[in-house]
Amino acid sequence: PTFDEVREPMGMLKRDHIRTMMNMERIHEEWKRVHGKDFTEEDVEQVYQTSENSILKIVHQFAEPKPYVLETVKYLRDKGIKIGSTTGYTDEMMEIVVPEAAMKGYSPDCWFSPNSVGNFGRPYPYMIFENLKKLEVTAVSAAVKVGDTVADIREGLAAGMLSLGIVEGSSVMGLTEAEYAALSPEEQADRRRKVEEKFLAAGASAVLRNLSELPVYLEGLER
Image 1 (cartoon, rainbow, N blue to C red):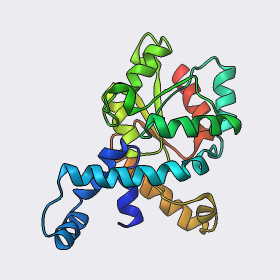
Image 2: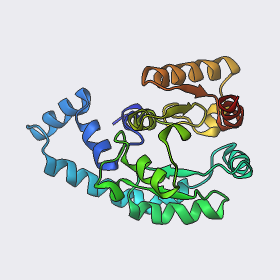
Image 3: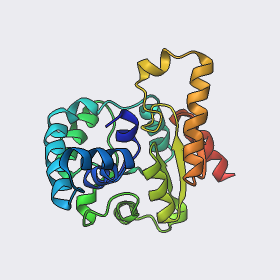
Image 4: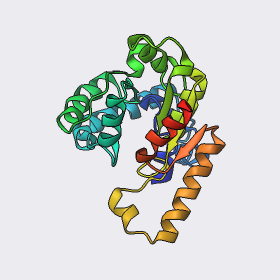
């Protein structure tokens, strides 16, 4: 698969991610060409198990907070705003990621994986609802969903809340910090525009360039 094919379903439960990819026209046709038949759920499971084993070996390398995360978290803490997290990772993966991220300065008040909601991951809203319950939030309207994948946006909308897309560093953009920094200002602007269009097409309530813009957005809601 291409990088674009891998990134398109980002944010989903990993098993759903693989199934979505295998249903993509090019990959589906290539599977039939190689195997002489359509894929089955057993094939999905086999590919998933292989990929899960690979992810577990390297996932600790991907716990570095993205730009402006720590500063924005401090702002939220100072304002008394609680932070809940949802993920496409399994509990086993999160057992590796959570302590790694905490050592680097990021630790949400709570988090829920698809395992905790019967494997109904994004775009289902149930992980959000578990966060709201744990954090004792009295109304969906009192919370805002922030994410960097189309699945995040759909999850937030399914929960009935404002859903914001973060452009820079997002899975939708598909570039590392170094790759993005190496682009010309014009190329960066073009990349941002394309990501913004994808988020808005998914129904995003707003699109932010990066997390540094979140405090201003939230203050606007208070006015």
